[in-house]
Amino acid sequence: MSFILPVFAILTGIGLLVLGAFKRPRRRGPMLLGALLVIVPVLEGSRIAYIASGLEWDPMVREASDLEGIWRHRATEFELAPDGVWRCRHSERDEQPCDGTADNGRWSIDRSSVTFVSSSGASVTELLVFRYRGAYRLVHNFGDPDDWAYSLDFERVPR
Image (tube, rainbow, N blue to C red):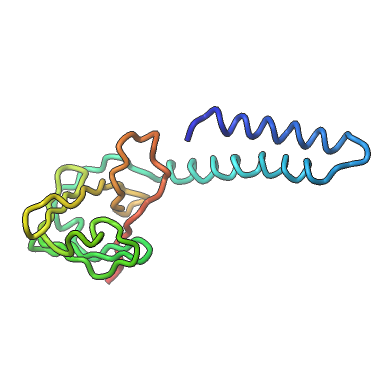
């Protein structure tokens, strides 16, 4: 998230709050808009700070068995099997790796990412491995960390 936009929103919100409070007759519209322009960036900043406080960006995954199991994000669910095979169990949103181009194949880990390859050998996707509050999470590769929306994507489903 850009730093300038939230600061501008907060300052504009404070200005609207002051304008609405001191102008006679009092105008509720600018005051409400001002309150929203202050509250929304503060809440989003708090959400990001909370997530960041429990996040390990680059955990060292020592063994593939650390990531084996069933993973879910919203309606998408896939399994990472002990034999290095992955398969989609369910997907309604065409979300990678279960986006319709492949529904099974091989998976491998490389330090802090999981690479998915289809059964025909085509590359499907790469998910980054994070550790959030002690549990592994698989996150779509967002490239530049400044572009990440702090979505933790796939969570392992307890058996």
